[in-house]
Image (cartoon, rainbow, N blue to C red):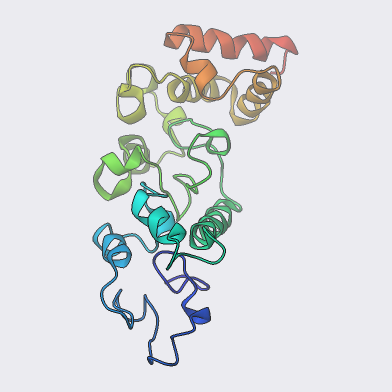
Length: 232
């Protein structure tokens, strides 16, 4: 249970007008069985082993939306619990990111990742990477392998060029491996500066690199921006 979040769905049990009348400890305190009986939202969250709905990969689902916007029993204002979940999720993500290296072990730049709004990054204690959920303990092969080898990331590995583990095995995703190879050659500082140049020029990350069609083409695009100002 997180401080400030006393229900699974985002409602504020502290503000509930029935709490004292029915001697109810609240949603989480009662294990999802508040004064009116078992709650299907709470049951769903507990079944999926998330602390609250905002952590679910299906957020915001139809069921949560239905409860929040119900004409008779819905939130006041409508959507209040959904917004509270979003705020709590954002707080947890930002707290997890503070002071951590934004470059993932695979080479991806977590700050610009499509999942950055709900994931603290694989180096944080709040890693919610959807790709990672495909593997045991929520850690992809790139994370596990680099940790086992005592490496900061895949870019320190001599096997990187031929590696097909984790992210490197997705045929249409080039940016992770391109980033790792680039960092291996020029370092993180050069990578961040080069990526900034590309994005300032309108190249979307990671989409713009993945759409080049091949690992070589994506690397050539990265090299193009590196050479613009002879960064390193």
